[in-house]
Image 1: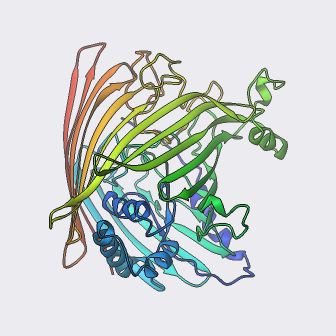
Image 2: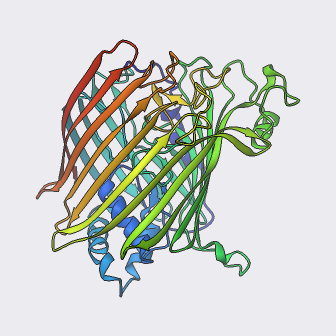
Image 3: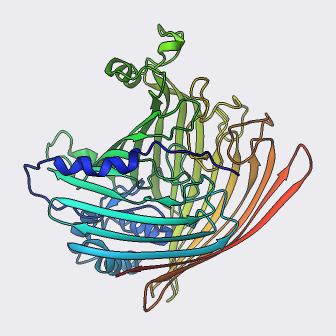
Length: 497
């Protein structure tokens, strides 16, 4: 797949702008934990499910500082969470809540970069090398990343993905960032915002500590988080230089329940209205042509919806059910034409080896498909004005399956007590299942049967960490009968200096 070319160049311009801000309140600006480490996510989810931490864990990046405060105050923990707590504390000591300057390097080599991406961070191209410098102070956090990529899909050999500069305002972190994000409980994908596409350069605001409200009227909400971003899309689009806006509220009112509300929008851009009134209409849901809005004045294209994760027990083992429902359109603040994801997971202890997790997840990106029914094709992530759709540099911003897909994924994870991890998954389903020929679908232009298998191993070395991955992806074209089977292998080494 050949990605789109060009860039708005806004990412490099965001960082210096924050340096002129003056802060009035002292707080710690602890570093952020990016999505991409499935083993670490399992440990944090286990700590949340057992009540060791209250932090919502379905919105990434996470604040290391928020997690550190809670686990440092944990003296007695359930036996089921002891291994996870030890691994998170070890990770925190190595690279988390450290003040001052830290340096890091990363190099990867592989073949046939993975087309369908999930939560685990694997190389995007066949060869990558990166260096980073990270500074954490009382009121500032800065990470600068310089990365060189061989033969990139989007012709951008030099990248700054992963960079950010942030300042603390009370309990809020205001930043200019080019970091991955992941909104939702899914392990294979997110219906609204995932790390499938390269990170969008954006101004962001995130809550530093997820502590509950002090008010007795609101304290029932529990630990809560809020994040918002104002991003800048590339110029090689049907509507160049469009803006990307997103916000998410997440709460854990009980140990067994986590809720999330998400909303994203694409608006403005060359030749489109972009004033404050336009943005206000967008927020109020007055953005559909014909709803007292002329097509020339339509504010933009947006997604919105909810997700939830419920934890319980069945047959003597822990079980969690989760779902994410994202509407492709907004009608007076009410999402419609839903995309649906659902999953079930369980976890436990494997003797003296470590902790495991199993999950079964299904994703349906057909508008109104609801996994089993018929829906509206060529709708999800699309818009008749913003014809590039909810995509960035040739990748869907939401689910990696892009639109009109229905795929089932079975995944397994093992975190050993030594700090190593094994992550495996198999998947099967249909891409672009309605069969409409598409020029915008980034993974299948026609109806395609999809099959995949993946095995990833993270191993801690005396110097750094090695990530080895092997996988298979098969694409069976239902129109021509042709089959495209691809094997891939990659090695990645990371080290903090």
